[in-house]
Length: 250
Image (cartoon, rainbow, N blue to C red; front, top):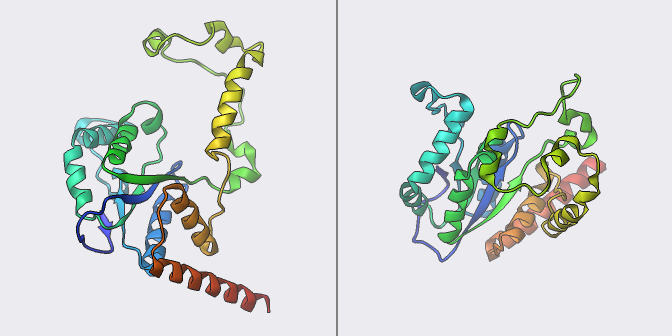
C-alpha cells in the first residue's frame, strides 16, 4: 500500500475506486497517474496493490501453481485473512483508495474471492466505484476481440459438473445448437435493462486532459463530495487546460 499521507482517525465513510480491466489495459499506470492528479488537488490518496504479480511475489513456484493458479490462491488467502486487510486499510482511513486489481478473468468468473473481499469492504463503510479500463483501439477494430484467424469450434467443457450449478434454463440442445434465438428475447430484454440502468456500455475517454472528467464521473458514482479546496483546485485545473488549448491553437 502506497500512501501520500498518514492517518488522522477514521471517518464514517471511506471512498475510492476499484480499477479493473484486462491485462495490459493500463490499470497500474492509471492508478499512479490518478494518485498524482488527486494529490495535486489536495486529496489524500492511497494505492492498494491487489495484484501480486506487480511486485514479483507470486507463490506458484513454491506451491507448484501456474500463474493463474497462483493469483487464485493469493485472492483466496487474502479473503481468509480479512482481519489483516482491515488493519492495513485502517492505517489510511482518511484517504481516498485506489485498488489496483489483477486483470485475469479467472479471478472474476471461476471463484468469488474478489467479489467477497469487496463485499466485505462495503460492510466496512467503503463506497467504491468500479473503473473498468478497455483499450480504446478495440472500439475501432472489433476484429481484435478474436485474434486467431482459424476455423472456429466452441466446446462446453466439464459437462459432468454442470448439474452442480443448478438447473439449466433450457434443454442442453438449445446451448449446443442454438437454432432458434427467439427463446432468448425475454432474457435479452432483462439484460438490456441492466446494461442501460447501470451505464455498462457508456465510456469516458481517458487522456491527460480528461482526468478531471474521469474523476468527476467516478466520484458521482460513489457519491463522494468535493471539499472546498478540491473544488477550487479542479476549477483552476480546468482553466489551465483551456489556456493550454488556446495557446496551442493560436
